[in-house]
Structures are given as structure tokens and as C-alpha cells.
Image (tube, rainbow, N blue to C red; front, side, top):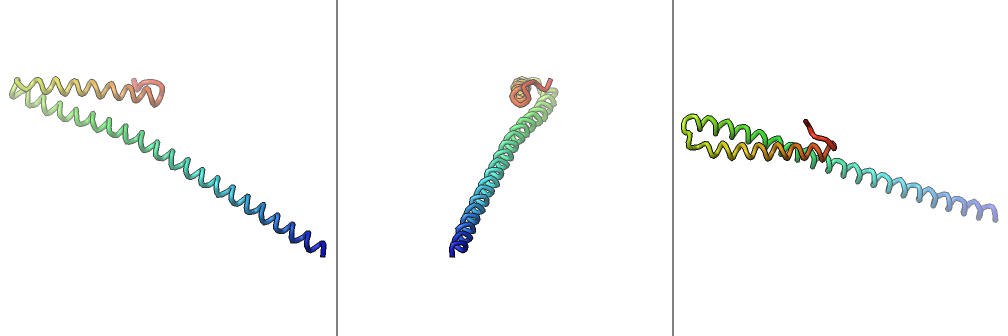
Length: 108
């Protein structure tokens, strides 16, 4: 009678230990998934930011080229070219700052 009681108690404790191990493993897997999602979100944010800057630079180049073409036919539109040049300088500066923030150094 005693031995069966001891065996039953041992089985119950083993089952409880297994449950604890399973719960800990589930928690670890959930933490890993959360960390991976955070990493993906951070990477997507950085890539989106870089893509936005590249898009802005391309838009400025196109508008600069169009404005220069217009200026050849009408010199009074030169103010728009100056405005596009200030945009170009601002975006170049932003790219430099982003490079400093990401790498600790500039792209230059």
C-alpha cells in the first residue's frame, strides 16, 4: 500500500515538473517571437526611412532638371531652381546625419 502511494506521489511530482518545463519553454518561445517581431519592426522602420530619403533625393533631381530646362527658355524662373538647390542641400545634410546615426560615421 505504501509503495503504491509513493509511486503515485512520484508520478504526480514528475507530471508537475514536466508541466513547469513545458510552461517555461512556451514562455521562452513567446519571448523569442516578440524579440523577432521587434527586430523586424526596427529594420522596417530604418529601411522605410532610408527609402523615403532616397525618394526625396530622386524627386529633387527630377524637379531640378525640369526647372533647369524651363530656365533655358524663360530666365525669370530661376528662383525655382534656387529653391530646388536649397532642398538638395537639406536632403544631403539629412542623409549625412542619418549615416552618422546609423554607423557612427558618415557615408563620405
